[in-house]
Every structure is written in C-alpha cells, then in structure tokens.
Image (cartoon, rainbow, N blue to C red):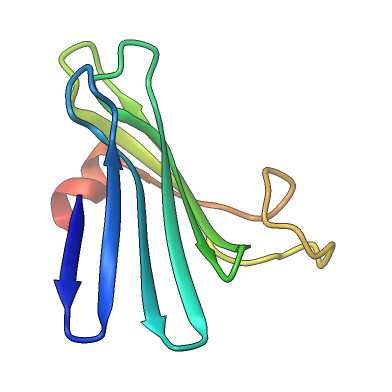
Length: 105
C-alpha cells in the first residue's frame, strides 16, 4: 500500500494471514529513509519485535511480551548503543516497561 503526502510517499507491506504490518518505508527528507520492520509472533496475530532503521542503520528496537489473551504485558526497548560497539543489539542497555508502567502511559 502506498500513501502519498506532498513529495514523499510511504510504502507499507502486510502479512496476508491477519493483515499485520511487516514494513513501513518512507522518506523523512530528500536524504533520509526511514524503515520500520516488524517481526510477528509465531501465530502471526501480534508484533513480536519492531526495528527502526534510518538510512539502513538501526536506531531503535522494541520487543513486546504478551499474555495468553494477546494483551501487551511488557515492552523492552533498545534506543542507544550503550556499549559503544557500533551495533544496537541485546548487548546494549535496555528499558523495560511492565504492565503497570504501560497503564500509566
């Protein structure tokens, strides 16, 4: 699916099982491409992990945890290369919000 806004457009791809979004790509400006990639849970009903890349460099990663009813119970976020290795991954410091934290937001 394409969404046009002025000079820029967003391209969105979906998984065909439950129409869950897989990728969203758009130009922030003439020199900046944003890509959001979603990895789905095994049953394809929810998003397991979201990675945001700016010009092919990972800028953030979010992992979701769900209860048996499909409700988000925790959200783990990586938003900086805290160990300085040039890669945003599980070796970096994370912020984890639990169900109580999520209700406050």
